[in-house]
Length: 165
Image (cartoon, rainbow, N blue to C red; front, side, top):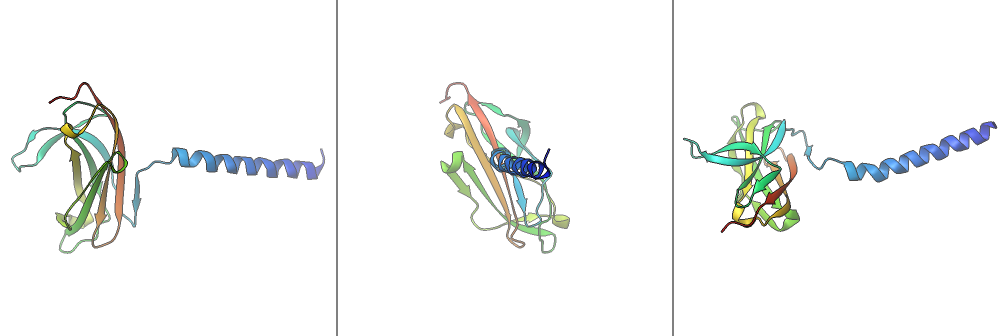
């Protein structure tokens, strides 16, 4: 085969592979991300199984399917890289349901114990009475007020069964 023809075939192949990557990559990109040095160990959807002695809900990993009427929690574990003052981070949180159908934000910054710039977990939730049966998406953004970094985690879930009154 002619060398010029081989080079032409190689260039066309590289262009086609590049175009395929550009078309497929956005469709498969994971929508959870960390920025400005913040990182996290994992996340889960959960339900509350009661209230602990500290007044906080006791959460049990669940999902991606929930019964009608169940509150749906999104928990982010092991957030690191936070800037602190005296081992206290200032964070804000914003939760979004179904692409803006409902958005909740904290009023100002929350002081959060964060020894070494690390928080064990944070969560937000949607009340089950607000969820119709079907597919839903929830996202939770945690922002570091001191450092300017943030993490956004997105999850999808399904509510099954008739809406309970």
